[in-house]
Length: 98
Image 1 (tube, rainbow, N blue to C red):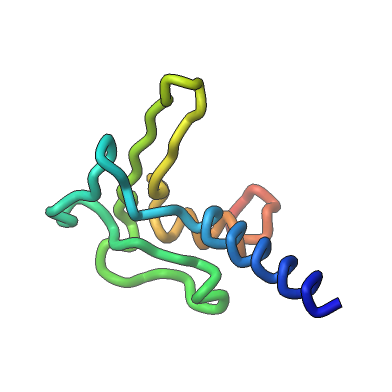
Image 2: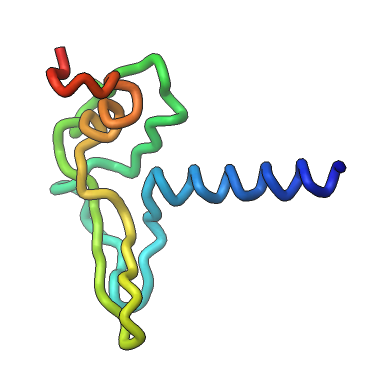
């Protein structure tokens, strides 16, 4: 029973990290050295009651994607702004955003 619970917890945490965006990059998608045009990596689930209003919260995040030779699309980062990311999770989903 403990093994099943641990396995489920691991799957949930992995899925959550993937949903928030992956800022590692790789040799084809290196992370930017200058973040001045991007918001810093943002994880909205860490701030459920705090709509992002910090400096650069209205700038898009870094993202990069490409298709490997075997057809798999590799995606790093999230090109939405922290405000868009937060609204996508906690905004309600009614579509009017008011």
